[in-house]
Image (tube, rainbow over all chains, first blue to last red; front, side):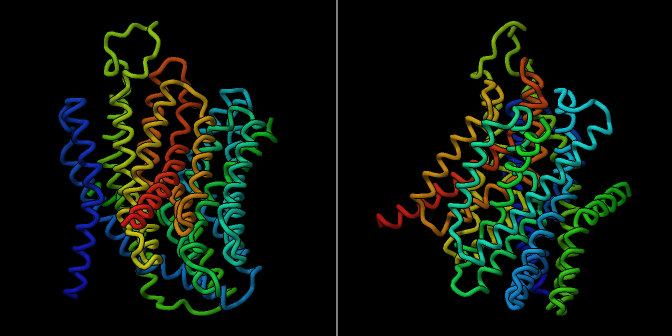
Length: 245
Length: 254
């Protein structure tokens, strides 16, 4: 018990250090640049305390739950030797975690407002909802596909750079053809898809797969799944824009 | 008491967010793998800790950092702060926005350091590389990338250049670096683009972009406000590869 306590306090101290830069930046700009007093000091103090506690619990649980489950599932799939099940799992993981992602829902809604004000779609609620949902499912499908491609790459040992650079080339080519109003949203959609829980799970899955397949190096082959997940949505969202116009 | 109610509300929405992932894992574990989960108690508690941690984290951000950060973004981009003597018909002078760029870089750096998913990937990378890659160095490299990215992104909003010129040039840099940097780091570097933009960075950076775009005449908050996130996910890739190249060169000269 005592030892657990020490580990916990060490983690707590680590989280404090992680937050120091933000506190410093905000304090500096508030006092030195904007020259204003700090509002609601009490609230801010409580909030910071919660952030530190939350970060500590999160990292604690990461090592206890998220990493082990991701790796053990990767190993079980590798032992089972069924590529089709593994790929189905990969797709479900990508699609399922993205479709309900709150930041994606927010961006899709925002994008619908942009499209309505630009006259791309009708300015009615139904048309906007339809557009936002279409965008969400497009991105979710793209992420599902990305994890499938990424897992296939790990199994086959394809070098990552050709796939990613090929993807970049596709993004560049599509940018010249896609309608202007979709480009900003498309570029952003790559960044918003990877949530705080998906990232550790997917990373553990990749590393677990790479370390249980013979001839794969977990460092070279295990990482890279997230890179696919932030690339394919750009391509698919631009395609979505091209189809709509 | 209010705080407790707020906490349970945040916890509830976190659980709802995690539900799809949890059901997919359980479904495949029970129907396809058909094997009990190893150390099920430990994993269960781990999940519980992650949920509680994330809920506390989000609640704390909502209470302390987001309102303050958003307010600062608004104040820093307000015309009265940028140039109180400017007339409405004056052209935008990008040099007046120095504090905005500095704030963009500082907030980008500091939020990336506190980003939970970046911590997760950095821990894993240190473990897998057997300590060859230090979690903290990786996080600092990524944070520098985010800082530069968001500062350049803010500059772009101020001057109003189209976004794709910047992103495509960034891609070209990535392509060139890929050929020259140590192979071990390439996949990790590509990954680090996607991990930086989640819980902490996105709301603050979006507020900055919206503040900028809505106060500068001729910019549309809806079109120009977007796009900072894309910068924040491109530049870490460049920064991490640069970090690997520098370490590589240093060990070679020694």
